[in-house]
Length: 152
Image (cartoon, rainbow, N blue to C red; front, top):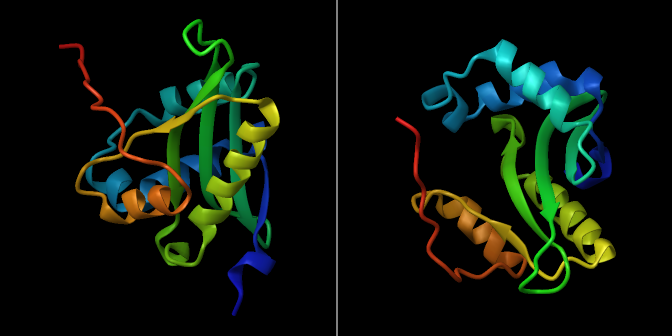
């Protein structure tokens, strides 16, 4: 069965917010780590969907959201042209390993190229070997160390 023929990638709409949260909660990371405030997440997602430099794509099969990816663009005075950063890529467990993540990532890469972005960045957990392999397969290289400061 070729999943790619049955999956449609499209721009997310406000009506997709609950399904997007459902995908997040169904994943290992979502169930083990994310104990987020759904009301706040819903509001934040709705606001993000209206931002000019923010793109949110969903993978849909038979009118059901099975994955999503989002990224934002920003100007770079250093590069002289905009850059982008992928924020999240999640796929329902039943659809993992069936090219849904690849389809979403390829869609973002096509959009980034069409926008003339000089670089497209992404971060993932060191332990997330599958994600690292996916990104490497599509030309992402481990370039820099990402440091993080969390508010206490």
